[in-house]
Length: 206
Image (cartoon, rainbow, N blue to C red; front, top):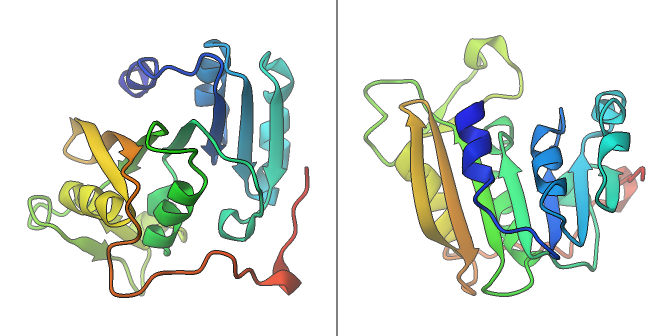
């Protein structure tokens, strides 16, 4: 954990608007707050509300927390720094998540802090692949169905319009990447219109 926090400590947040997806225990939020950002906005799932409440009042920087499905969360705000750590491998729509993050960045100066668990399969680690866990979830954790390799993490980020600045391998099972918004649109044959939201199932608690 300390190595991951040290990696985050190199990011400049002073006077900037920061977006964090999935703050959970708030450790990264506290690090960012100590750097005197202009604001911190967090988005997490509604069932994490009780956990978030245990630390959120200790954050000194201006803090706004939204409890919602990130892909259905609506905002007109743009952000200078985005934290997306320990989240992607718990989701099935990984490319859409990375693309939506890019749509929320201010410009090419926006920095994305990305961290993810990766495949443990020794035959896949050196390949550009995503390991699918079905019908049984990885280690019986129902939210872990897709574990990308290190190369796949980089590929997904680049496809979604993020330029990789620095890559650090914590160990063979985890990777950290710092990116900036490349300004490119989704590099696949289909683009996703994120203006569409499933209104009937959309709910945000602030």
